[in-house]
Image (cartoon, rainbow, N blue to C red; front, top):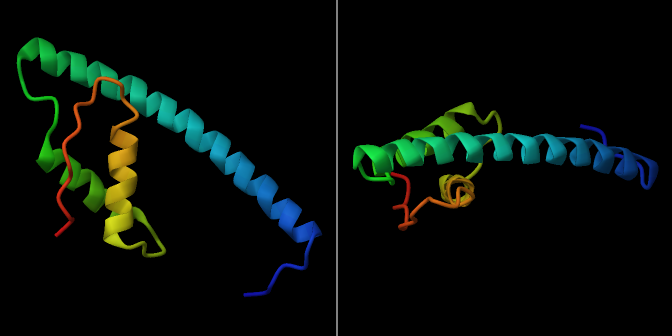
Length: 98
């Protein structure tokens, strides 16, 4: 892999990151909206809002999807942060991914 030569490549790379961040923000908004709908449906049905099995499935999905490995603990932290974006989400600590 070649090293970028500063500062032109750094600026170009930062612009790419900014585009990715914009896409992530939009996707997080959409995910939060959908998750809110699920939470309302669960509350109306009288079922638990949090689902440890589903959370583990999400973590496993992230780990399986990533092409460059990220430590499971970091993925767990990311998933928890994403879940907590939904205002109605009632948090409880996720266990370490096994």
